[in-house]
Image (cartoon, rainbow, N blue to C red):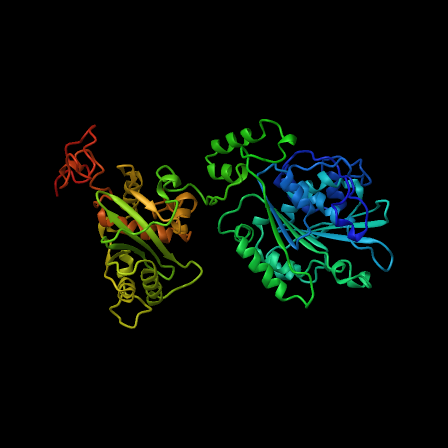
Length: 583
């Protein structure tokens, strides 16, 4: 199979045949063995790795096949930044590596000695990651005996292959480097042709922004003297990854076409006049079970079902969606507090929720420099709409500033609506940032935003009533409507329910351990704000007045034709189990 039409402008002949795809996806090395490899000399470490090492030269590629059309499109891409996302086993990593050889073959010949010189920089955070997954994947495509290895012992590792494809000599150089704690310092002085960001969603965006200035610098410009301008620039950053979290930079860059174009235009503006515009391309493979799922021909029939079963056994449905079905999900930080009760299909609206006219807004507030607000409405008999949220985790805001931003939100989204608020009891303590010594966080926010904020005293600020209040709303369904419906713009709430409002262990002064929500994660602030507003319609126990049989029948407006739920029947204790003595 030759080069694509038009690709021969560099005049370098056909693409070379590569070793057949083994069909594996991320085999890798055990962590303890990776640590041992990091401490070795590169040649010694590579020699200990398993894998065929009989190939000593690059064969031709006339019978080369691709995992599928999307992977093939990535193979031929010469965009400045290119990304491919897909499920495990989709062949994306192998395709990325094979495409590097195509780009090496197409390099312009040096006007000094006629060699085509290509250098690939492979970047991960640690050398342990490089030795445990990246280098073993590389060796599946480029067996260890093809070239010479140098470096190692906790430093960059280099593999150099020199060969002739029948159209002249080629030097194919690959350097594996860990950036550690300081991306900018590690990338300083780097000169390379291309950069491969393996498992891109695990590296910071600074690798991309620093790396864009390090590509297209190997070999030096002196080797291209006399070439037209379009042949003097030949660099690429290539990214491969599984479905990322919505807040990961790979999602923001690659899934948003407008953002991709904005970035490309911004980087192009810094280039000299007449330079080729920057291009960013993205290829997204179908997930398992979707039409066009790629690389199935190289996988056993049980490959995906076996992984699904293992992940379900571990209670990691989020990993199934992400790694198998290639869906964007929030990555769990632990065991979600409301995992049993929350269902995104039920509790999150598909489109923006329009507020009910004539119904006042109820606003829950969580105080502090990382304050949070949830704007809600309550509809009879027990339906909550969470319409908006306000939270700025990257900033430390004074109460007045937070109140001003809340006022802006209400004016923009809910003009003309009356509002009342319920806040954390801790927000009733004097605010150190207030000019008035009697001012509190709740008072400052309320006065600035233009509504009254009262402290939420139900349950005396204990966590259990708040959790039960949330469960009551999540579990209530009447007339086909859920007790809680969340606007899709409330990303912190949704992420909290799905993945980031999780249990952790707390040890008291007596040494006893109990499960409590992890307050170290920023989503907990917004979840708390939502809980405070829910308690405005709850008992001191945190439960709604409709939680026990008979409670709804005792409420006014119940009966045939009423919107209130009817008595469900079942066992009844005959008294309020939370107030047995009628206090």
